Length: 68
Image (cartoon, rainbow, N blue to C red):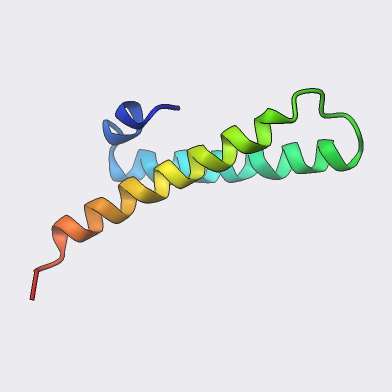
């Protein structure tokens, strides 16, 4: 998922996307441990997607917070 698509999501959709990405990462790690994962780049891509989602969430929190 690219950053533009993530930024277009609502807060609730961001939470859902984050939960789905974390579940996908867990599944990929499990498949890797059981030697069923063929595309190992899936783990790296999923970790980066999670980071992008968390970055957008943090940006939105920073915009809402009053600056002191």
